[in-house]
Length: 496
Ligand code: MLC
Ligand code: AMP
Figure 1 (cartoon, rainbow, N blue to C red):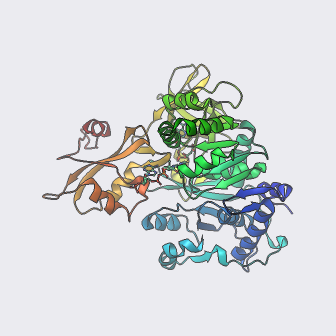
Figure 2: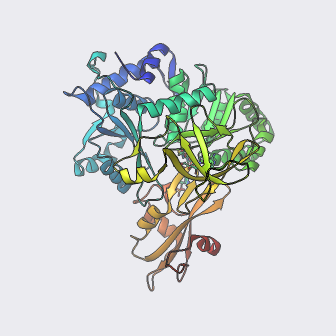
Figure 3: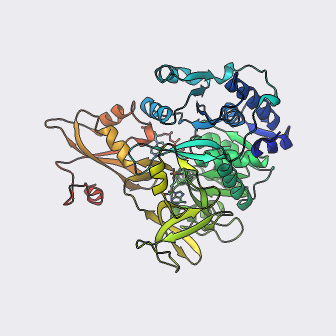
C-alpha cells in the first residue's frame, strides 16, 4: 500500500519505544495500531476523509500522536488546538478552518461540548474509540495533499491558517534530520505546546521519523525536567530562549553540589537547540559558561519550517542564526527591492524550498501578497556577517514574540476594545529579560472610568489565552498619533 512515509518508517521501528511517560511506554507498533483504530472511527462509512479538517484538543502524549496520525492516515487535515485557549479563540479556529469533527480526551469534553453543538461539529472522545480496525480499510494518501493547518498570528487582526501539505512537512523534517543528525538512539523531552511548529515538527515529528524516543509532558515543569536530566534521560534538548533564561535562574540559585551534578548532565547531551525567538548572546554565553554546552541557535517560521541554523559541526556563533539548512534557499532583499549581495547590508529574509507552506487557508489574496516571485517574504530583517545570518528585527511593529509565542498586537487590541472602560488602546511588546518581549498596553479610558492591571487581566482570562494577556497597563489621556491619525507605536514605547 502507498502510505505516508512517517507511517511506513514507523513500521521499520516496530517494538522500539516511541513515547515514554512516567508510568508507560508505547512502541512504534502501538502508535500504528492505535492510530489505525482511530482512523477507522474517523472514516466511519467513508473510504477517505478527502482533506476534511479535523480539529483536536489533546495534550502531548500517546493520544495526541495517535490522533494526529489517524487524521493523516484517513485522508484528513489536522487542526491542532491550543490546550489553554479561551473559548472565543477555539470558536474562531474551528469556524475559520471549517472543521467538521473535534477530537478530545475525556478531560477536555466539557470544555468543548457546547461549542461543538453550536458549530454542529461531531465530538469524538478518543478514549471511547474501540479497537476494531484493518489496515486495508485506509485510503492511499498522495503526499501532495493538504495535511495540517496551524493558526499563526500576524499582521492581520485574526490569526491565519497556514496550510502545509504532506510533502511540505516531509521536507521540513528531512532537512532537520539531516542537519542535526537525528538517530534512533536519540531521546528528547517534549514540553513545548503542540499547536505550533516547534513542538510538532522540530521535536515530535523529527523524533518519530528517526525512530527516536520522546518523553511528553503536558507543560514545562522545571523540577520534573531537572529530575529527568539528572538521570541522563535525554540526548537532545530543544527549547525557546525563555526556557534557557529560566534554567539559568534556577541553576544559579541552587546549592553548588546539586548545580554541579545537573550541569554535568546538561554537558553530556549531544545537542541543545534554541529557537522561536532571539537568543540574546549574553544568555548563550552564560549557558556555555555554566555547562560547557554551545547552544545551537536556529531560525524558522510556521510558514516555512526551519530556514537557518548554526552548524551541528562547526562554529555556533552567539547572536547569529547561521546558514541556510539543507533544501532551503534564503535571500535578502533591501528596502529598494534589490537583492542584497554584500555582507553587512540589511534586507528582508525571503525563503524558497519544498518546506515552504502551500497557502493561507481561504485567503488567496494574502497568500499571493506574501510571495515575491516565488519567494516567501518572512517580514524578518537580517544581515550576513562573516558568512552567518544575524536577525535584526521585524518589519511590522504589530508582531510581538513573548516566550516564543507570536502574538498580534492588533488581535489583542481588538479584544481589549470590548472592555467597557477602554475607549482606545495601543498594544506593544516591551523588551524583557525573561519573555524576550512583554505585552504592554497604553489605554485611554472612558470618562470617569478606573482600571487597574490586575482587574484587566482577570477580565481578559475568558477571552484570550493567558500568554497573550498584557502584563503592563499605562493609562494615558490620548494616544500619540501621526499626521495621518495613525497611532505611532514607537512613541508608545517611549511612554513606557
Ligand atoms: C506563560 N506565560 C506567559 C507565557 N507563557 N506570558 C507571556 N508569554 C508567554 N510565552 C504566563 C502564563 O500566562 C502565566 O500567567 C505565567 O506566565 C506562568 O505560566 P506557566 O505556564 O507556568 O509558564 P511556563 O510554563 O514557564 O511557560 C513558559 C514557556 C511557554 C516558555 C514554557 O510560554 C512556552 O511553552 N512557550 C513556547 C511557545 C512555542 O512553542 N512557540 C513556538 C512557536 S513556532 P499567570 O497570570 O497565569 O500567572 C515558531 C517557529 C520557530 O516560533 O521558529 O520555532
Ligand atoms: P511563528 O510565526 O510563531 O512561527 O514565529 C516565527 C517568527 O519567530 C519568525 O518570523 C521570527 O520573527 C521569530 N524567530 C524564530 N526563530 C528566531 C531566532 N532564532 N531569532 C530571532 N527570531 C526568531
